[in-house]
Structure formats: structure tokens, C-alpha cells
Image (cartoon, rainbow, N blue to C red; front, side, top):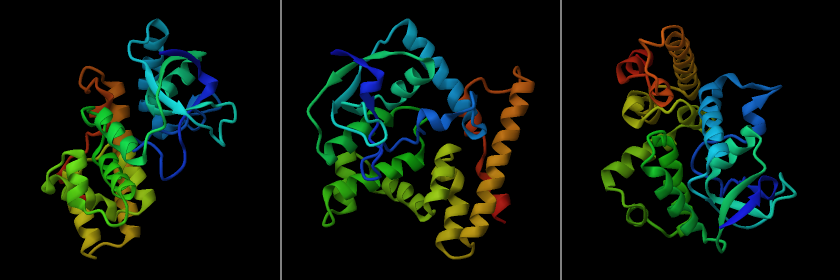
Length: 249
């Protein structure tokens, strides 16, 4: 374990090696000193985590030697702990405890990051689908979904559920991940897209309305905190299947 300078650590931002978890860079979360509206809840959570890290860092992050085009001073890239690194940035910390390991293979990296996040309640189905996609790419073009299921210990039925979300175009996938919408909630929407009864533009309209509903519910919960769910993850996931089905209809 080393006490590493924050400036010497960076996330790997290359598309093929980025973390499966949707986590914007610190400079994209805060604009002119204020959280960007779509990530207001996330910034609140990260600031709370940053305050906790100021008091005590219980678990070191895991890094490996590497460089970053976006962060020229970096000597290490993050394998596990991207969220803690982001929180430390927002909190103005100068150092973090880090375990330095050898650079992983692509397959090892995806598997370890998936295991690290799988039990977290804020790890969404869209992010799981991205991890599946990355694992298949890491294993090579000749790999099968059955082999991917074995690596990540997923059933065939669960893998099928998750990969249906890949029918959304990339910008739509980011919206789905940001809103923490699960596959079961979105089933009417991705089914309509896959069978051709809805166009991508119509899907955009539904997702935009779901984003508006999420903001409306968050504002209402803040105005009446005793009636709202105190867990920001649950607030973000507050859209139910019937709401999606009505919008699709």
C-alpha cells in the first residue's frame, strides 16, 4: 500500500478499457462551482464519500502503472476505486492510499471491475450490459456468449435480459445508465425498438420524458423529505414499469 498523490492517478478513458460503471470525470460533474443538473444526486453522494475519505480511508484503491493523455502527470491508472478517486477530487484531497499491482489483461480487468461493482445497489443493468460487451471483446471475436456467462457467473436468461439493452444507441444507453433504469422497467421500450414498432427518435422522446419525471420526483422529494425516499439511488430508480408502458403506448 502506498500513499499516492491524487495528481499521479487517473482513470483509463480509452473506450475499450473504460470502467463499465458510468462515472463522468470530476470536471464534467462540476461546472462553475455547481453540479451539473443531471448529476446533482451523484455529486451529493460523491461529496459525502469525499468527506468520509477525509476522516478515514478504510479501503485502498487499486492501481497499475500507466499514463493518461488527459492527465499528463499520472503515473498510475485506476483498476478499482474510480468512485473514490472522483470523490477525493471533489473533496480537494491531495493523496489516497493505493495498492499498486501489475497491469492486468483486458479480461482480468473486466472481471475484477465487474466483481467489484456487482453487489452495489447503484450498479445498473445498463452498466452490467456494458461489462458483458467488454468481456466478449476482451475474450476475442471467436468467443461465445456462453463463455462470457461462465467468466462473469451469469445465467443464460440473465445475460439475455441484459444484452437486450444494447439495442439502444450509445447516447440512449448513457441516459438509461444515468437514470438507473433496470431492464424489467424498460422492457416495453426496448421490445418496441427491437421489433421495429418504435423509431430511435420516438425512443429518444420517451427517455427524455423519463428524465424529466426523475427530476420532478427528486424535486418533490426534497420539498417533502418526510414523504420521499432518503436513498438517492431509490429516487433515481423511482420510475416503474407501468409508467414506461404508458409512454410507449
